[in-house]
Structure formats: structure tokens, C-alpha cells
Image 1 (tube, helix red, strand yellow):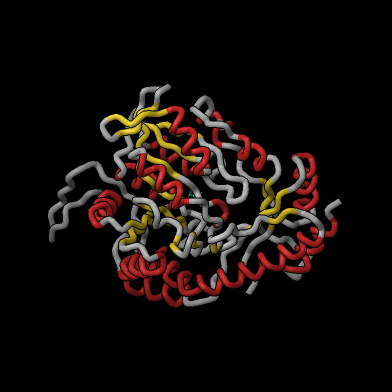
Image 2: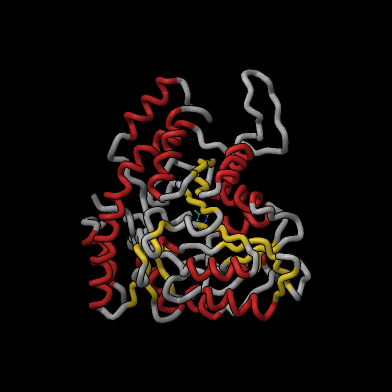
Length: 379
Ligand SMILES: *Cc1c(COP(=O)(O)O)cnc(C)c1O
């Protein structure tokens, strides 16, 4: 049934062998910098590559500060702690996200509230957010209180799905009005811009991931970006065991975390950053090729929305229904063309069942139809 799609993907990647969904590419200075790092002896949590990476990623995204971390998940955890999210608080997010977003909320002892996404961006819907807040909350002493649970909604984490920016400026306006701190999960959207501003720089803090499957990778790693000097200092402190700088004393002034990015990983990442513009260029060309093909056969291909520049991290098609989706997943994967459905909605996972939800019509619609197709950079 999907023979034409499968053979087109094989044609694009010029192989009938296994085609992964997204594989990393190391074609620049990776080995050189890694050698340099090993030779220096500074392979762990201090070293020049960590500093260099933080400067470069800040400059690339236009954020004033960047703090490297051991993963995107740990960056989310620290951002939430810095937003003062704690036991008994609530945090709004979308049900259509990777589980890490909600895990980080749980690490703080807080609970997620799930609000629907827009169908076109697949990211948090400002209309649904506004409607939920209007109907279910009130602002008391500059805090947003949930009428149903009586708990304070401290933060909101929209996610830029597969690299496509969500309507984050509208979301920010609503969050500001309700005294909710905006943290963007930009784990998938390095190199994606909304209204010419990098994703992750609209909120108080933004989080990027450099896991192996992301657009550039440090093997494992992440970072927090922010314009707030005070938050940046606190983030560095918290992620580095809260050690008070001193020539020799071991003095720690709070319970900190070992969430540092090792210099080895940063060395890899500095090189990957040098390739980022080229990767994005190639990925956008791949998306053009796919878009033309899928338009031609009447299958919906997800395009960047207006005023968005997407990194097209994972290319996405939308099938007519769940049955068709399952047939496509079966046929493509059995022929070595790796495809994947979108995540099971977070409110359906055992640990997040029973959490408060808005109307989730769009999320459920997308859950049954979205498939990611091979998206590795073709050099
Ligand atoms: C990858 C990802 C994360 C987590 O990043 P890790 O570096 O794997 O911990 C968080 N949120 C989203 C949406 C992601 O895709």
C-alpha cells in the first residue's frame, strides 16, 4: 500500500539497506578536539571546551547566558527548581511531548496539567491555554491558583515539537498575565526561530538537549539559556554541587546536583556547533524534497507555520487515520525504513494518569496519525 513512499525514501537516501530515523554526523573537527581534550588531561567537569561551548551557544541563540548540563532532562529539572517549583505546585504542559518534560516536573514534587496543542504547530495552543486559565483559575497575591485543586500553578512548559516553533509569543503574554513563569522545552528546536527570535529565548529560561538523536549531539548533554544573570549564576551553582568557589576549601551552601557536562562531551559539541548551519541547510532541503513528494501523492506533510523557521529535526507526515498509520509503520519498518509514531500522550502513561487535563481533541487527533520519517542529514 505504501510501496511508493518506501521506495521514495530509499531513493532519497540512495540505499535499500536499513535507514535510521536520525543518526548523528561527525564530519568536522570532532576527533581533533577530542584528542586535544584527552591530551590536556581535562576530560571532566572543568576545561576550556565547556566554557567555549557555553559562549558559542549563547551567541548562536542570542541568549545572554548559557549553562551546560549533563542532559536536557537535568536542564529542565534545574530550570523548574529556579522557577521555585516545589512540592504541591502545578505546572502546565502539553500531553504531546517526550516523557522527560513531565518527569522533570515530577522530580520537583509538582504535578503536570495537560493542555491541548495546535494541530499545525503540534505545540501548546495559546487559545486552549487562555481558555483553561480563564475558566479554572484566579490570580491571588500575584499567584495563579487552580480553582479545582486550590494549588498554585507556578510554571508553564510549552515544547517546540520536532523543531517546529509553537506560538510562544502569545503563550508568553498569557503566562505574564497570570504570573506563570514560562520555561521553553526547546530540546528539539536548536536552530529554529519564531518571528526571527530563537526558540528558547522567549521564556524566563529555555532548555536544549544534545542527546544522540538530536540535531547536534555531545553524546549526552543539555543546556539552559536565559537572559537573567542571577538565574544563570544560580543555574551554574546548582548544577555544580553548589560549591562555593575557593582555592582549596570544600564548602557547599545548599543541596546541589552533579549535573555538569564533562569537557569531553563539550569538545564534541564545539565541533558539532561548527556544523550546525550546514546541517540545518541540508535538513531544510530534505524537507523540501519530502514536501514536494507528499504533496504530489496527496499525503499531508507538516510544514513550518507562518513566521516560523524550523530546523526540521524530524520530518513528519499525517496519515488519514490510526489504521493507515499502523499499516505504514508495519510496512516501512519491516523493509528497513525506520519510522516512528508520535509519543503516547502523557496523560495516558501510568504515572501521569489522573492528572488534570483540558480538552485534548487536537492531541488525540495527532496521536493517532503522526509518523516521523527518516530525517538524518544527507551530506
Ligand atoms: C530529548 C528531549 C528531552 C530530554 O533531553 P535528554 O538530553 O535526552 O535528557 C526533553 N524534552 C524533549 C521534548 C526532548 O525531545
